[in-house]
Length: 347
Image (cartoon, rainbow, N blue to C red; front, side, top):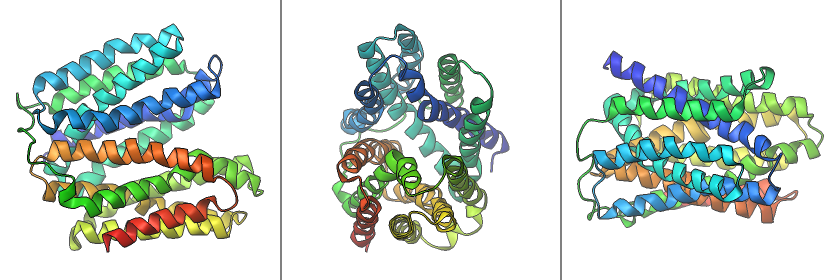
């Protein structure tokens, strides 16, 4: 393993997911001071929609160094729109950012998984550490969250330049087909739909069943800690079975995770246990999915673009919408069934 590459990619993941920590944890609160909840919902829908739509541009067009550089420049410069406090301009910025990330991040993921293979998790864990540390530090230290977001965005973009090599990043993608691995893509959609209730309503759900707000933070920390541990050690075992085995196992355990939340919503110990399954639901599944795509598709960057767009764009958006309609005592039973359908499809 190239030590210089490992250090550079680890720093990149640290910066990128520290940025995402600011975006997910704190920016909604910041925007709540001058936007309505409906407007905030639209603003935070812009990035996943853009991440879903952007890969379709490159089905017939090769991704070039020019596209990569343009994504870096436009996303960095357009960040000034955040200072306007204008709903439409800020929505436009997050759409641009989503489109840019759909070009930059999947390419870097493809390079990382190609060079690191099963040791990918050892570098990716620094992203989880960055996300968790920013959440903790910003909770105690008075930070200008908007300035922090812009600085982190620019630093992340600059660091991505270390991984840009070829003038033409990918070949023409006319042979790329989602139908080729339709079971995988369907399973990804059902799995990520099942996360809609967790990301949108977990805090509301458990506190409504008697779990204190103080414990909610620790429950999230348990999930991230489990994720970090698996990223750290998965290279010891992940190559002993094919990626498809770990994908199936992760989806099945995710179904069990949501079922525990449905059956024991007021049992703190069992909810904490369910959070440890995040090690499989996200960490092991994510690495296995990247390895699987790297093996199945010649155009690895476009495969990663569609993975990010479908999983964390389309399916995440759909999961959030469905969770809003399904919220109630049976929410996590529905989420368990969604994940189970994904598992059955893979069988």
